[in-house]
Amino acid sequence: MYKIKVNNSHSFDISREDLNKLDAIETTENQFHVLQNNSSNKASVVTSDFNKKNYTIKVNNNTYEVDINDDLDQLIEALGFEVGASKQVNNVKAPMPGLILEINVKEGQEVKEDDPLLILEAMKMENVITSPREGIVKSVNIKQGETVDKNALLIEFES
Image (cartoon, rainbow, N blue to C red; front, top):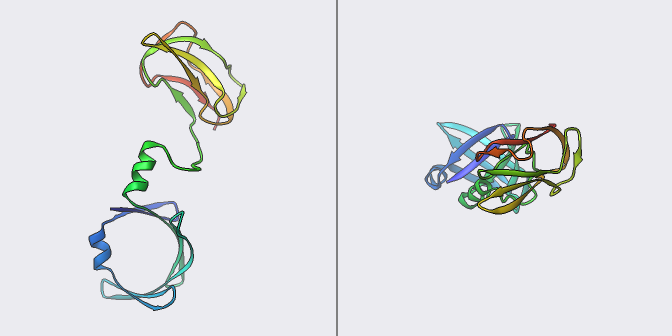
């Protein structure tokens, strides 16, 4: 199964079976004649980045930015391991229930990625929770000595 994203706004799932049914003939290099629902379409690949699986496609004089993700790409994204992915995390939540031992930041403070934000004690272990991105702390929603549940909102960043 492939997940196709067009112009960063529309997403489609396409199976290998769907691809096999596609009626497309390459007329010249990177130029195609495509039949769909008894309609004739001219398509061309304007630019392609095979490694990033990103293409600019022109269909009947309309240009589209297309990203293609296969099963492995989708799994990597689901696990949060995308290479070079921009991190736009706007809040930090408790990864597990525990006790807030120490808070190292305050509202309005500027932090860098991986700066220590707080220490959460869970199962007799101290866990340093670090900043997922560079930014400014919008709010600190916990107090030292407070017990928190898993997924409790700890710290918010300005957008």
